[in-house]
Image (cartoon, rainbow over the protein chains, first blue to last red):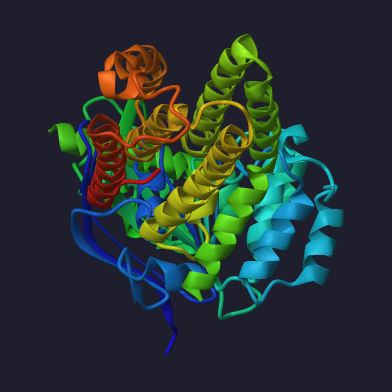
Length: 298
Length: 222
């Protein structure tokens, strides 16, 4: 049986102007889960709840089998956490931080740390305050990776990085889950990064999880159909169609549950299917968020 | 595991605070060394010693607690295998050890210099009341630094703490039991002095206790 490294059930957390509502998710060993949402969707809040840095109002959270926040300290022995806004001590070097982390985590892999130093083009003796944003993120990631944690929680680690730095980081993350006991939860609003490395994807918007599935299912079931709709023909209202845009006799229909039967339905209604397009994860994400917001407003 | 880790975090913080602590010990020692050199030197030395302890207080709390929160270094520290309570305890103990260590060393030096020089021992109770005020001021600022993220509260405590010493000194001299014994060859621990010291210690303890309580009630730490 596959081990669940994260179990979140019915979690709620209220702030004055924001509410995390009924969030549930599970992450199994060997998986990379992409946690995608616009700015302010609740990604960082959930990450901080998982780390015990923020206490949820309702629901239950277990990380590596430990209830959070009660047993956050033992859980964090096997978690590597990196967030985009995390800072290291500015007046000391990366080597000093590496020594600190090595003294805390028995699993610290000095050889791998040296490999990452070289791969990320970092200089251990350089003071942290002299590092660029990208170097700083890579330094925090090095400190998290070289301790060989079973679970990596990464809160927007690629935000503001150049394409080369992003590629370096994503490559390292993919290498992590070659060990099937480990897992990564990776939050981002950059769908390209998520699409590249994740096998599970969760969309969150305005504090609610709006959709969750494995990546292939997402990419398979979302489609955009281009239809010719002669005058007088009315397209049937279908439950899984999230958006229909019309311009003259052309209609573009977005569906979240594509099956070949859909073409037949439109053809029977008198429309002609001209093209069926697969959608990128970004297009799926935007369509999903917008359709969810329309449902909430209705 | 965690007692070891908390001790390591304390040692780490003490290492980071080593330069302000060393600088304060050096500057404080120079200030104390000036005290027996004459009336003007004694006054200048005393004022310099007060300044050294006030600056150390503000630097330790604002740089190593408040700024650490503001700069989000706290997120990194809380990603280590400690609970939020253990992290708070480590921060408080490290910071308090750094300040109290300096304070104790400089206070012992003041007592030793006064005892060994021609300065009358009768000034010791007054000086200790002022030094204890600085310790109390540190504890209150540390408490507010730990419990609150508000720059307004920090500025308020710093302003009141800095200004109040200007009221405390004339008030202490206005107490006959303190003023009349200032040139005595022996330290006279009058009821006024004991009451002032007791109040200062009580306020310091209450502030720290309140800060720990407020911190324990918080649900969000970053």
